[in-house]
Amino acid sequence: MSPHALPEALRQQLTCWRRHLHQHPEISFQEHQTAAFLRAELEGMPGLEVSQPTPTSVLAVLHGEAGPGRTVLLRADIDALPIEEENTFEFRSQNAGAMHACGHDGHAAILLGAAQLLSAARAELTGEVRFIFQHAEETPPGGAEELVFQTPLMDGVDVSLGLHLLSFYPAGVVAVRPGMFMASPDSFQLTIRGRGGHGGMPEQAVDPVAIGAQVVTNLQHVVSRAVSPFEPLVVSVTQFHAGTADNIIPDTARLAATVRVFSPELRGRAPQLLERVVAGICAAHGAEYEFEYLHAYRPVVNTDWVAEEVRQLAAEVVGEDRVIQADMWAAGEDFSAYLEKSEGCFFAVGSGSPEADSQWPHHHPRFTLDESALETGVQMMVAAARHFTRSR
Ligand SMILES: [Zn+2]
Ligand SMILES: [Zn+2]
Image (cartoon, rainbow, N blue to C red; front, side, top):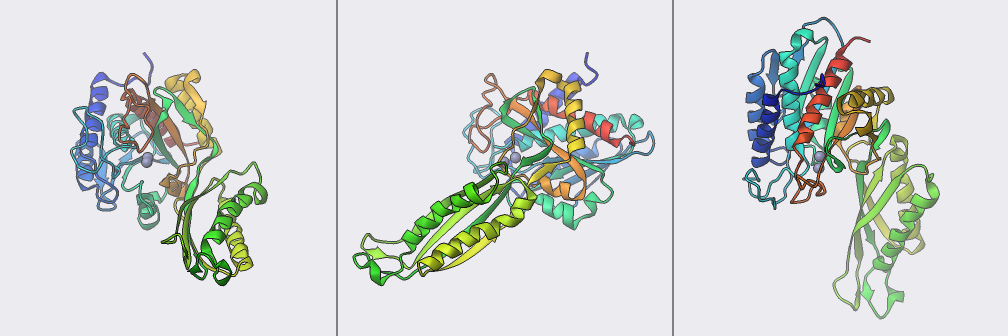
């Protein structure tokens, strides 16, 4: 039997925890019942100091009893989404309009399982493990921002680790990527102010629709000509609102876009590169504009040596042939906040399988998990906590 195998009782417990959480989802910043449930479970485990750094997050601290070592933070996010669940299984959401459609129910169950195993084995553990059950990952500014920058959570943390269950990787697979992994989901709002008039006499107006159309196409020039082809940048204009009738040129057009970038350096330059195009086109055609850039989560950039050691641990846990290099993923994650204050790695555990009908995309009303992935998640978190708490 693998040294990483879990006791049967814990495997069943993981499913119970996950199904309870799945049945009682709460959206970002409203995770009161969720936090109370997690807190009660953690308080039943010996050796954990349990507290609530914010009203809807829970922290458990475990001091190893086998001597000094490093401090490792393990993070799970716990919030649900404002989605009406379409699954019909018994443990579907009981809260109308809320659903665990991203797998955070699984993340919380996994971290409970890791806390239970490590607290029982604290006599052989060195250093310190902090288990943070983080609220509000789905809604910027996000719970991590508050925990990392406004509480002492990260004081003395050497390595931070987090995982995401991903339905587009098969259950049983662990996917790790050194360096750039996930994008920053920044955005901008743009108002183009022209001068309205008669649709038949455009020479008397400044047409914000025609100008906006040029802005939309020219923004792609930044992607293709101003940025290296080896540096991913996504600019998607996702809103364009203007006008009221077919014979009226409107005064204004309102546009909004998402801007995804993986490199912190390019992220710094992107607002100026994009605004320069907007300013040039508006000036060329006599319009004014307002450009508001919104910085959301930082990109997730893993520490190379931590990612390499997580990859080696994964090979021990699931076998070399089930460890893959994760693709870069243009979603955002506020795990990046922890990486501002410590080294660390965010990695993926596959949760998709045809048997469990769990290959639906994240944030879909039919999303669910292959629950065997919970076991893999616990094995990874426990192996990583033991490994990274050892003094180097
Ligand atoms: Zn999500
Ligand atoms: Zn998520």
